[in-house]
Length: 177
Image 1 (cartoon, rainbow, N blue to C red):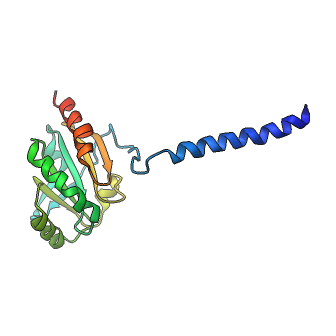
Image 2: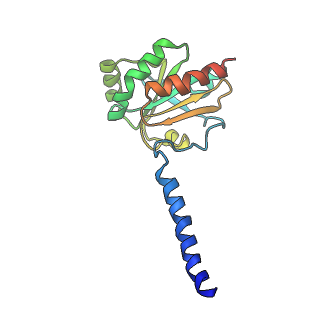
Image 3: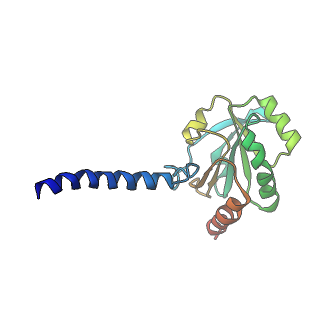
């Protein structure tokens, strides 16, 4: 009986490790749950891309459901996502605020002139400090924020049309009731 128990313990440990490995490999690395979902969006007051003297604060959006889209001119996936953001801005009444992350303002302006500017406002986070408050560790990232300033959705990586139609639009409809 003792000899069989000696073999069962390592076998049990192996099965447990294999189960954790299997579970970990089945997760999508782009779907990192944000600890900010369901919490108040971090406060910020940042300069506007087109008017550095005029600050814009996220508190200015209180009372509205809005989308915050983190982008940069140097970001390849941001260009892939951009037509989705443009179409979203055209097809909904939800304001889309651009959050230009660690970018040169001149480059951002040129990029928006070239590819279209779907944003109601574009704020500039030159050093990325506010981005850190939002848990941004890459671009693009997108947040849906409700009327009370609570983050309800976060997408790491480029938005797809499926994200918009299956996740964002239904959530906006729910929040607008």
